[in-house]
Image (cartoon, rainbow, N blue to C red):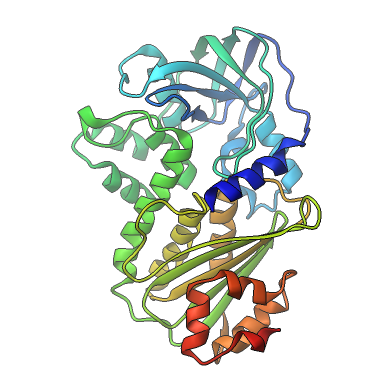
Length: 387
């Protein structure tokens, strides 16, 4: 299924042309701070900074956690991201002791934007959109990189110097201290966490899913200790040409993610899904990183509320939707989980409520599902009830 989804999203972005920042071979600007590490040709990958041709505070350009609460439009987000120029240089993921990696680490751990100068082998070109990572603008190989001195974030600095602290413990400790997910992920990506000799660079898209997974696994251990909800609930949120409905059931933990792409390219109505029962997930999800981002966001809220639940999430993407990375799922679901819960007496009435918000027939979601279908059958509710 993941190949079908990937092929669809590639087709969705293939015909896109959005003007990105034009720069020459020399760039003098500010990094938000931001770095990007590719996965192609692993373990020898392309790594480098992302720099805006602006001076001053560019933090907003690489801080996804702030975009939805501040009601940034899709156009504003794309404009931020395509203003970031990616420099790149081939490096081996285990070779962390060199001046270039030192500079990438300084950028990633910086507490604020950092002034940078870059010289490229040719004028940066192109742009990148992905369902996994946030977009960025043109890129080119780096000939030279200079950065100003920076003050590191104290929490990230402490983790870097603790070479006896496991990477998973570092990620969870930083989350508990309220560090932004994007800051944690970037620090993880440039090899600043984990046991000393085992540290290495981690490609950005892998780092995002790794951090989501680490947090979800730790949060699930806590959530399993709590009593289930005492009623069926729906929480919902809409933004960036998406609608999210979180159906919470008064059961032990179980989880299903369903996403629909509704007439974005033409008349297509596509559905993709994956799920796990109480024992958890084995193997990588067939729908990609969004599965883990959503799971983390739901468990984060349940742990905060000290409740356990089964969670079935329905997402619809509409005309105008552009893949912006899994932050889109994580932050929208986080916002949904902060909305006032709507209680329902039974699953049928909860689904009828959601049905009134969806553009695709609810029947399609039920047919695609595994856990939702089982829940209806266990409550002797038939598919014909929603036709």
